[in-house]
View 1 (cartoon, helix red, strand yellow):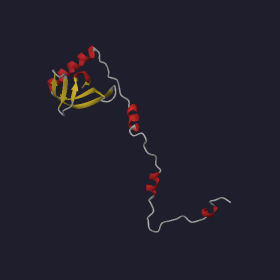
View 2: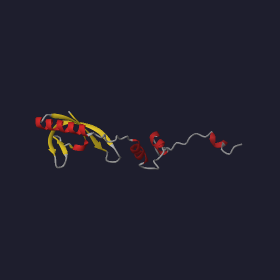
View 3: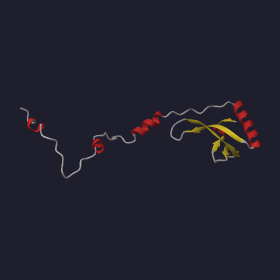
View 4: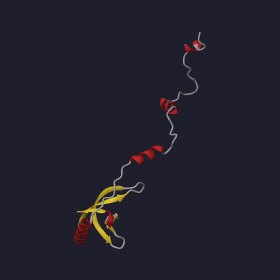
Length: 128
């Protein structure tokens, strides 16, 4: 005879004074905990892909300069494709913005759009 045979057939105890815990709360007691907090974010950041900055040759830079001078004279809406440096990893991504050029700051070597976006001359890849 097993030492638990006499209690195996007894009914499950239910307290008459205390309410039963909801199933979701009971399940949460047995859920795994995050022993390494922040580990998941580090893995996600490592897996995030960045692009390398494209290198433009002299002919392309001269072409961009001519297009920029043309667009500044006409004050029309422009679509600028540029490289945006990533703040946490090496590399970045290529972005496109549309707007009017409010200012071409030669001293700071930046274009400022009417919405306040500031783009370095060296980051511009295409103007249209």
